Amino acid sequence: MSSPAHTAPLRTLQFKTYVGIEVLIWFPGLYAACYTLQPTVRIVSTQLGARAVKASSEWLLQNAPKWHASIAKLSTRVYGGPHKRAFAEWVLLNKVLAPVSFPTKLWIAHKVVERQTVMPAEYMASLQPPAGSPLAGGMAGDAAAAASELAGGAACAVAEGAASVIDGQAATAKQ
Image (cartoon, rainbow, N blue to C red; front, side, top):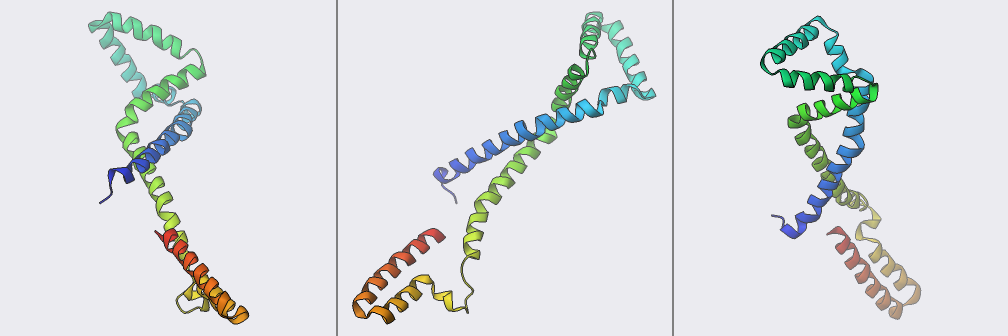
């Protein structure tokens, strides 16, 4: 089980990743889609969409005339330009899609952070030589053997000391 001290940096990294996804990918991507695809204009231009707008307008006019007036005034402002329309569609779609998009973005952030934290361990394992190769003992053992052959006993003691330091560093790096 992970300790709270260990999971706190992961949670911070997941939150930062989520914010990056939200601000750098989702918001601009959805706005660009609203600006280019014009979803409300396309829906209202169909017969079904036009009937739905007319029916809801008539219902509001009968039951809530003040709301009808404020919505009519707001819609003339919103549809005054393409950027205003795209912004209004962007806000509407963010609210409508939030129950699905929010957990999805959190899941994506979790997977990205998980991949970033698992990958270094797999990368370090891939750097180890195969079991049957001459380097399987590690570079520290080879250095000690080479120093022993070249310089004799005194150098061998120094090389073995260096080998133990290098092996200790390699063991620490594996953790």
